[in-house]
Image 1: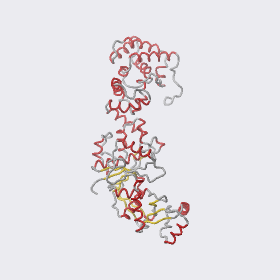
Image 2: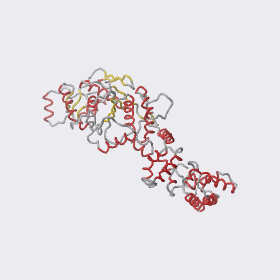
Image 3: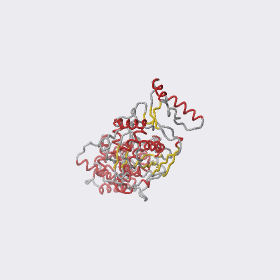
Image 4: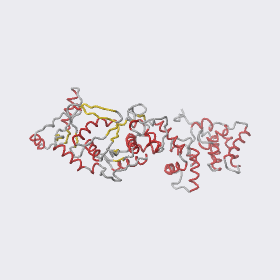
Length: 500
């Protein structure tokens, strides 16, 4: 095949998970690197679990991470429809063809009979597979089963001897013993094609040149190529990607954290940072670089550089990478990402005024060096938007619970109110003047001030932080903390999580 055509073919039975996004990303990058086409196809042959809500979740997840498609259900293309439930007549034609030429047959075995035979195989130490009971039924036997009212499925007649060899771009040559496979179902009793039938027909009719999918599909591949051979189709090339593991080196699951891709959007990850992180799970750019822009990634991406070893989904690494992206992105762009979060919490207007927007850009620009997630701006920076913020236990223990701090805060409030100019230099001078008058180091005024105004002991440069708050707000917060301190209401809290 001259044109590179890859595809992502999810089932609309739930949200787009991290593993699916990883597969889609690799297939998309390869197509873009080769100047080919990337196709989105929806495999909804699970007629019970497929939902329109799940289909929308797939669109949302792919759009968020920046993956577009050249052909698909919503954009059309020359090989549509791109939803399997709309292609049933096509599959039926090929199933009938396989039955007519002897490559497939009707199977009348009941689920109970199948399980009984599998159990016998297990007891004999054999791998459970279909035993071929209906493989060579006579016309009379078939008629008898149908007279009983038995439902039937259709199975592919697979080779019983020899091996099927897959030349995988990532894993090299992989051989499968045909005797261990058994005849698999290509049409269910409901009349729906199975995944195996539909995926083979679609890949071939849509002229997919490279099937790029997760390693867990590798055992399906010998059956798929046998089906292609029976239909007279040309085989595509295969590349089975490494699994994604948790940090305990077991398959990624909910116990490792979120597996729904959009949960990471809700947690405050940037799409470009998550995309960068996912591409490094099982692929190396050939250098020590870890932060790659999209153009660099597309230019360098090859399937030959994909590892056989599993990638480890380390949330700490992903969070660090996200923080690096936050540092590099213009604050005005980050404000647009943050506005929905802030508005949802009721901290800012959904459409702030030009003056308010300019102030937000200043706040974000000051904070972004110390944040790692978009949610940090909301959680750690709530003091910019409301007076109703908590005093964390470290601030209470180190400063606000001390007996000498309330008088110091009241004295600083007087200094603050007296300032004729509200800027970084004036604020710093007032703090240092008070320290000199009290004959203490500047840190013994700076740290209590930060704790009183923000409820925290860490954050951006204090003087720049204060400049972005109204002068009267700073004075009021200093007095409030002093009053609470004298009343004993800022004593350390017992056994606070993370500060035991």
